[in-house]
Length: 109
Length: 109
Image 1 (spheres, helix red, strand yellow):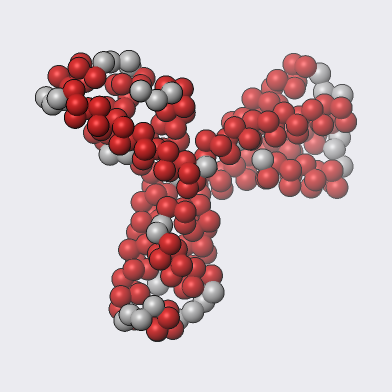
Image 2 (cartoon, each protein chain N blue to C red):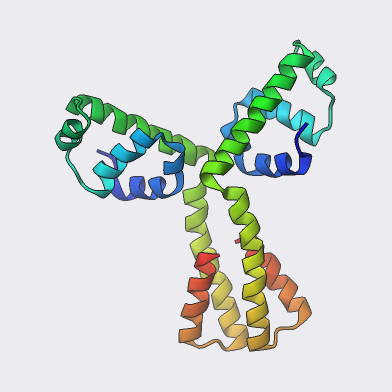
């Protein structure tokens, strides 16, 4: 199926927009690494139904990202935090340990 | 109708999730300040239909905020940027002009 890392990141941002059932199945498949057959059994349905649901959810997650760009913005932000800190480091002679502290503070903002 | 400032902020975050027609009508009403009657005329429909659409969109925007909290997070972030900078200001004797520059850089991150 699709790239697991990408889907896992998309889920971090958009899983609250899925239904509880969709979210549950996506988590079993992408985070807990259950097989389609195992998830089908847990949900009393066919492997094909689970496959289709996962495909549909993936498209849904992509459509949210196309509209809101939260994942893209978050990746850009990471680079801009580093630029911001590199600039600060030069100006105020910030040491490496302090740099890392500020970086993690900014990432949590 | 509902609080215009709140709706305008919600639109900043979630308007891409509305349909083009919904977005268009919400913008005419909340940003361009047209009346329900004027929007109804532009759309060849009744004042009541526009009223209902706006109500529906408002509920939709609130449901997105309840799930993703982008507006709430953005408001919290503003406070945390100030805490971060106040801390930095004390440590590195940052002057007021530089403080403002860093603040606007962080707000754009």
